[in-house]
Length: 197
Image (cartoon, rainbow, N blue to C red):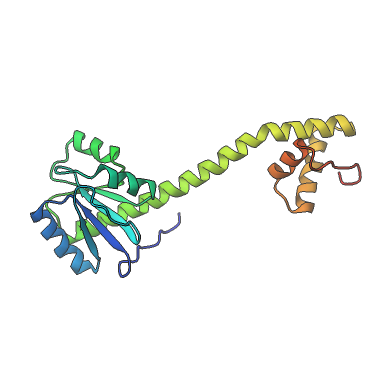
């Protein structure tokens, strides 16, 4: 299991979205002690997300759906803040893209822990999404591999195992992925001669 990198509290900033005045005062006090720079945003205020490492959004007076869409699209971790741990609030937090839930009353320890959980989970989700994309691309390339193997088997009158070994050997010799090699063969960009394979 890899450790995630702590956000840069000194140069980055934490967005506080649609927080009630009393909540805002408590959050800012805790964040100041933690050395975290916060920026307040209300009702989809037009602001840049540059340097934003996470956001805390209060669910009850929530009025910034566009901002949340932008944050989710940018992969920014979101913490939902609520005074009620009801199923409907948890579902609402998930719908908004939150990766953690911060319950009132707010303490310095709970803010830090919840923030780090949100950042860690967001990193894990991003890593999983990249892995899934890679696996989907490899899966899409399987028919090309099958065609390349079939072509070698027919043209060189060899069995499937031998065709695969030759293809793999050529892939290593050319320092190219098997998937790329098969794609080129399917497009007839690379016509391996008997000498190559």
